[in-house]
Length: 322
Image (cartoon, rainbow, N blue to C red; front, side, top):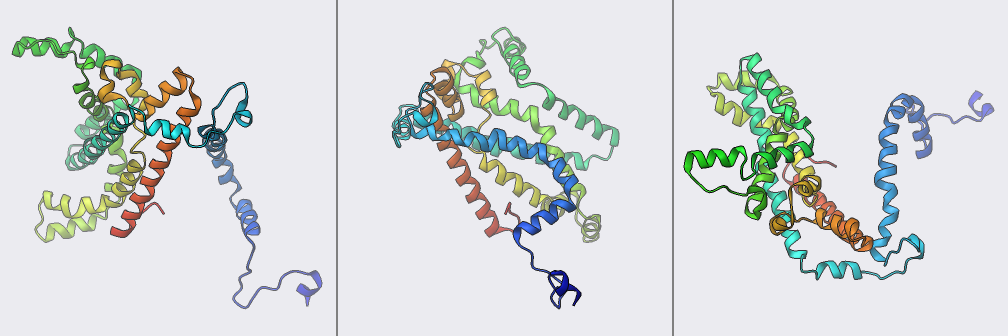
């Protein structure tokens, strides 16, 4: 009777009240307002720098003019995309982007896993900490400094060439000015800089493995190699799969900043990728519409690869992003 008088809802027999979506959101916000407050800077970042700029993607379908603006520039449909697909450089930049990304997946991605497995086998704590510190340090070096070190060490009169000449009597090799060396240097320097940092999350996944599994495997007579193969790697599998899916989703978004610092017109044949091509067309040549079309193509393909990779993972395993 009291509920009827006050107009409040009478809870059903099970004690639950079906709330609308808006009511659930308001109730959840009241309960976790401190958490939402902590999350607000990240939300603002994505709104301002990721979702907000999507409004400007319409210029990919326009002949954009800074004088006319977004709304005043005339529509040209898919002409920018057709120009990109028929471009002389399309096959080259797509090939270079895919090759650099695939090489990173084949060599750089497993490097962190291998280092984590090796560190897990070290029993000396001081030696393990020393190796971790040494391998982590390059990650905190600026890309500009890393590429500067590469130019100094790999110059014709640098340490590497002087060593090769003194030991083998070879002619100095212009490493940074030969297109054949670019991919090797890009992937190799990336492994050196990031192997320690990428191993952190894999070490964390190893520590979460139940120690009783190792005890059971030892009782069954498994040596360290078999324990690694049958206990450690399966325990790391969910983490590896999630990171692999994310890396596949970024297959076409190769590190443009590093390539811009490393490459030159002589190495365009193997170094020019979609990101650097977009930079030259959009920033240097001020062809904003064409660059936006190239960037949109890159984003759509990356999103499709992410969906496909997640779908495959969902079919073959229990680990997936959604």
